[in-house]
Image 1 (tube, rainbow, N blue to C red):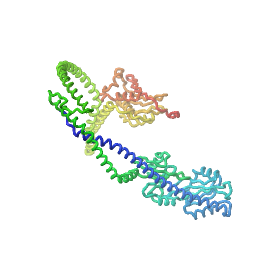
Image 2: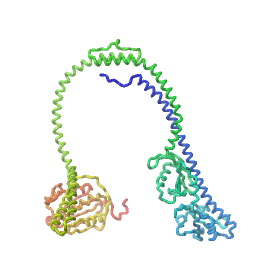
Image 3: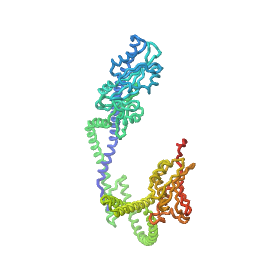
Image 4: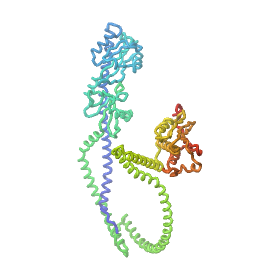
Length: 628
């Protein structure tokens, strides 16, 4: 049965012509819109750049006024001061006439303080910049503008000027160092900041000096959170005076920058990039009527062309479709030229090919029927082969299931441990609660509670051993100091009564790069086994020896020792000679040493105790200055 398709050839042709006609229009429109968008962006960046330069000019003018004030004072003093050098009365008078000056110091040409005038001598300091001041003022004979200081909710700038006995002198006799309050600069900036843009002034150290909306026009704290965002703008601009960049939050913004001469400050002006989009779409809406008219004319043209060109193609195709449907439904039907319209073009050629195809299909149909009989015999043979292969696959599957069961043991251990620990935790909590209720005068109950708690700890210990052996996690490597690490393990280990833990650490320590928790668990397993082997009395020695490239950590006991037959089995999982235990303690030790690419040795004589020695590679020796 031929599937009926939605739509006709005519509608599809109209759609195709519409797309072909619309694509060039859309491409041209898209190109024009892109050009308009770039032009609009450049205009916005130029306006931001102009504002940044205006703000930079205001800052330069404010600073220049302060510099000019001191220059005029020095010139007037040289000509009309009545004495050859500036004295204490001069700088007191200067501070009295200009309240913005908070401190003034007069230095000789070597930098030694001669006179000082200020309201708080403890805060004012120019020691860190004295070398730069002397080089600029004494050696070069120029004025110096230094660092910005914040204190008591105010912003100050450090300035220095050369002092000459006579204005025409080349030699500099001293230096005037002053600190001025920048409050007037903040008010000027606050007054001139635009309302529709964000403006920020950044110092050479990356700290904020001023930005739009800050009270008083100045940032009076060095820890303003905006400084982190602004520090990214400079590298993003990469020397350009303006560009579209992305913030650390991924938001696109337009940023322009201008430099402030002398001060080495930077002025940034910023607008959100969506402002550009709003302006762009606002200008685009005005052209909607023109776009609608163009689309209507294009649609009428497409319909006319489609009717004149497509209809002569559709009719022969429809007759061809009817013959094809009849050929599908009727087994004895064979189409002829009378059933079709055969024009002298590509459609007519298609009709002739269709008639030839019908004949060929009839011949192939007969061939297929003959092949089906042959295929039936081959299918029977194939079924026999499939049955044989199925038996082989069944056997292979059984072997695979056995392997997967072995692999599932580790996962099962984790699940069972989780299911057991939850009831144990409930029992432990219930025991503690009942102990608080039962009076301490009942020693039998207290003893039973003690037994329950001991058994819970034993069960948790067994669960931890099973989990530690079954799980394989990624090692968390860290650098440890060997002696401090071993000392902490020895001090924290709960030795049973009658057992003494002794340290025998090498005086020379070393640093190891290991999984601290895995090594700690392995050593605690060895110490625990040593304590149990001595049956309540004896000494367990934990020591170390530091070699050239490796360290030896050993645990020794004076218990009954280990026979040669047991030495070959004790590291096997689930092997134990104790009445209670999982047999995983030493298996965990061997696994841990293997994961650290170390070595594990045991030496023992029956009746003389046993020594377990772990050898690990040194990461860094203490005092080795060649280590990187």
